[in-house]
Length: 284
Image (cartoon, rainbow, N blue to C red; front, side, top):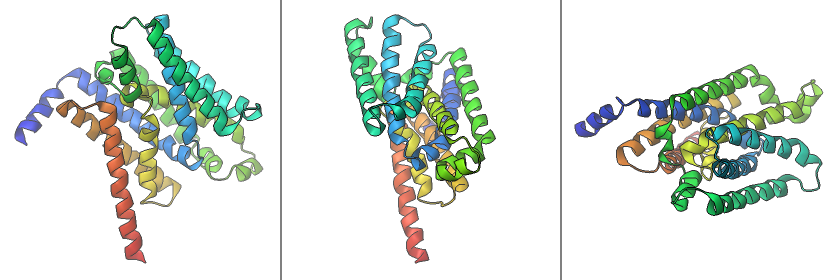
């Protein structure tokens, strides 16, 4: 145990490890706050669809040779979020069908582009790293850390400023409209924030594991708490602790970052479910 602790202290002396922890914890916090809304509004499939869109945009950015791929991926993912929530509602292809279409299509075209035009010699490793997360979270530049920090703080500010509006729209859109709230506008705001979270999370957990990363903490908190505020706080605690534990374990043991974090979140969900059952049985 002393040797493990000494090894951890040694790693924490490196700036790239501190950068990874800062970015990972900020992303985990933001994703958990909006993850509760995502689950309650049954927007989980939208999150999954946007994650696949982000993969397709990443592939296109790689082929086009963008130095800053986030500058290309972010607007593309945001535009798709706008289309799914606004344009998709008025189109002939609606709901789950539109999400499935754009999700599978983006995934297929992304892989095809990488296979045909990628300059990398190891396509399988690139694709696997993008889908399931990679060690790129440990190679973030100072500029990328600042970008993630600024966007994360902006999302936290949005959540705090519009907390009550998000609450109304999450639980009862009809009531929200009745009291003068522009429900469509706040649904769009939620989708835009989720799009940003997904883009930021790609380096951490990969596009295929993002949905689990966002949803597991919310589901865990719902097994223990009953009010929106306590569920949100509980989800934030579970998500941040899961990200911290997963990052440290992956650094020490050399395991995949994304899979380790999501596995920790899954175990937390099982523990919270067990605790909820025990509490319900004791109360009964």
